[in-house]
Image (cartoon, rainbow, N blue to C red):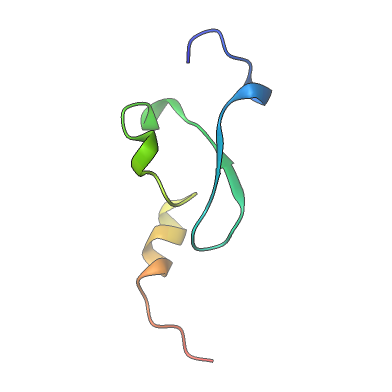
Amino acid sequence: MKGVKKQHLPEKLCVTCGRPFTWRKKWERVWDEVKFCSDRCRMKHGKFRPH
């Protein structure tokens, strides 16, 4: 991803909240496996949510 401007970074949608999030350097090796925009969404995803 060297030399790529921020507006041209790849994006995904969070499976929990549905918000778009962009590629980060720390996800460089695991980008295909990233599903959540934050730790908060990751923790919330597995929890039972009553009506």
